[in-house]
Length: 172
Ligand code: ADP
Image (cartoon, rainbow, N blue to C red; front, side, top):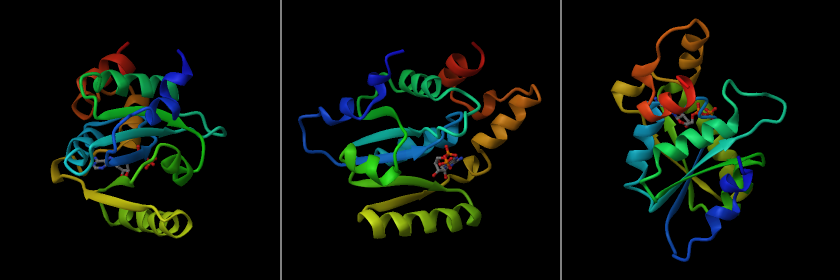
């Protein structure tokens, strides 16, 4: 796969002045909880850049490029959603793609404690705000880590994963 396809340059080519949100995460794999957040985020931003953070030290459960490709296929008919991978500091990448804010989800007080620290640091070092959406109650128990655990033990995870993602990432 051409890694340029999911790079920052492909994002910056837009000719319009738009409100852009960066939705960073591991998305390993992308769940219906993430999908719900993207749908709701589209009411707040003209464009959402789903950015898969790559950790050079830690190989994910699914290869990052495969995660990106599956999400790209999911949103192939939604031009307001872009997908890319990145390996820099999230705030640096947010500036690189011209993001107006970072979008994150909160499922619980545990998420809140963790996210609050990061959002405070990001605002103080880079002046970028983080907008949080509370998880919809029916999705609040869904996490990529639970999905990975179930997959590890050979369980069916279709109820947690958008069908397109399941087809291109899990069942192929
Ligand atoms: P990270 O490894 O950075 O936490 P994740 O892929 O696990 O990345 O999550 C990315 C973002 O999506 C986080 O803000 C997380 O809180 C949010 N998120 C994950 N699952 C859900 C869900 N079920 N409902 C709402 N938000 C979620």
